[in-house]
Length: 389
Image (cartoon, rainbow, N blue to C red; front, side, top):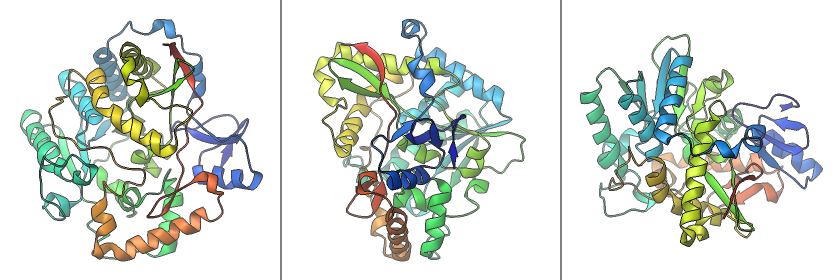
């Protein structure tokens, strides 16, 4: 579907000036037919391009986190925080608790076979993304236990997405249609497998409220270095974690940090990140630039994660807490147990064929050809000026 006037709350894609598509695949399909020279992700560009940079540095980040939490509390009857145990979602959890702002539910999507100890041996030695299941043992489970004791009024909902996919196979048409319905921005196996069941969203919330809001920890600032100037941008890939078609259609899914309705928060995070790079020029090599490939950009962003936590969440994040590296582009290392499981062979074969079908009509310039399956390439917005170095 293309729109000319009102872009989506969650971003749009465009290959021709003035025409936006809410569906990434449809935009790519049409773009492939006309061979465009410019293909962009649009995420409330007018807000960031017109923002008064002179107002930055006046409010603290904890103050803005509190303001954002209260804004969401006032908007919804029932609030669900989708919790991963990482610094982004943990900061949101602590913001609600420390400021005594009511949070109704914490939802963790986790495979029960993993929490039962299958496929891996819990350890804190291996920090590669392949050891991501160990975060359950050393981060997620302990934090949930603490939450049960300190805040028993907050419901804890652990959703096992493997309960049905391990007992039945899916045909190619089903998976293909599901990917298109989800508007999956990449189409990676792990992200699709988590959402194959039709009742996925229903299982997340068991309360009949008029207005249920789903909060996700999207996302840390993304900076770009060009001609000794710092710019910032937004990409479509973080929104893959928020794929909830029904709730998104009703605009009930919230990116906590990328907040067009509280741009002061988004911009202050970007500003504080930019100041850190300006004061630490030895780290400028980690910034994305014109010479980087998609793979290089992914690696550089992963390397930024550790010190960004100290800048953005220094009041809520324990840097000594166990956490593995971020995943590769197709997440085949993070979800290795899905890719390597013999029980899910039918699912993997069907997913691979579905992605081949979906991408067959697209030009190679729209794809990432990984070892496993072709994926849709991530796209970013245009660059927005932040500061001179």
